[in-house]
Length: 142
Image (cartoon, rainbow, N blue to C red; front, side, top):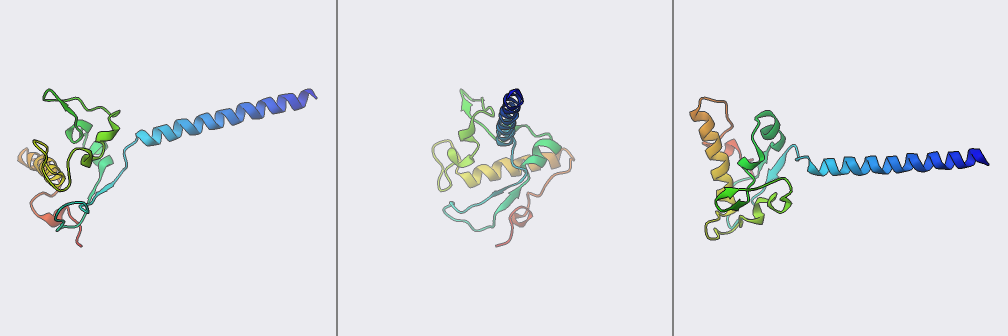
């Protein structure tokens, strides 16, 4: 009888640890950025070019570009974005795909300004950079 109690207790402890470990791993996976994302223009008023594959992980880890270089929440002219600002993870949460809203650029212009300006600045510093001069340097063919 005593062996059954110990066995049951050990199984309960093991099961609890298994569920706890799984929940920790799931939470960590949600926090990690996708290695590559595809920026699609399907909601644009006019979408003339193909999608752009963006290597999020490469920009963040290999090139050491901080999250706030792209992600932003402005208050009093200062970027106060943190990783807890999940609603701002999608650019379209603020940047409308079809039109400029007040001071906020439409989505396509926001991408172009952010990406192209960063790549231009790197080139001006003599550093290796991604394409920015020709559309098909970034955009896949349709």
